[in-house]
Length: 153
Image 1 (cartoon, rainbow, N blue to C red):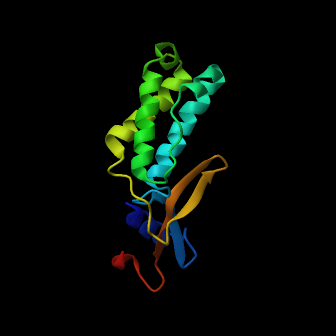
Image 2 (image 1 turned 45 degrees about the vertical axis):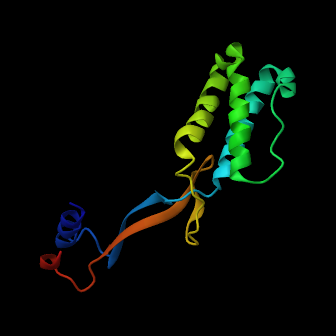
């Protein structure tokens, strides 16, 4: 459809230049910018932060943060953290806790085996807007009709 549209525009002298950028889009990288343990750590931190805003005394009930910097230690810590939170039914009913807690559980149960750190040197952090970022590529599609006639489209 794009090719036919450009062909018609060239035929009717609507397009004067020799090339035209048709579209640009953001393409997410296949891998994550963060390691699996950084993802778990960030998500558990978000849960704790929301809980502290409601009940700061929970700090004393939570397990100690992992001493070793391994994914196994982070998984064990996250499992212990979830156990403690699950024993506090009133906390789990707050929407601002429920959503990040469910994401943390889902990450632990489903996603952890699929999370891989990016080793792609071309992937970058890009921004769709001032408060929205993605990790990947900006992909452009361009067409050139220099030296072509409408039969070559």
